[in-house]
Length: 76
Image (cartoon, rainbow, N blue to C red; front, top):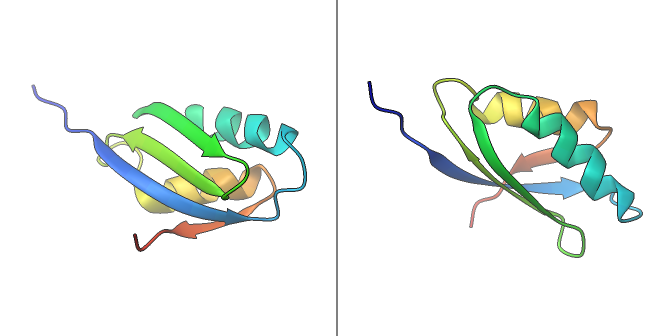
């Protein structure tokens, strides 16, 4: 069995303090298939390494939403 990992970048809105980083990180890491999460407070970027068969982009966006923030896939 092989696994493939994809690197996805999301843009989030509504960051007001550094604790937002922890909230988002915790919610996204709860998803099966997520191997790494990096949240950049200053830029609103969320970089996620994940197995798209277990955690697709809509699931990642939903996880950020459960933390209380709006996110969308970045185009670059």
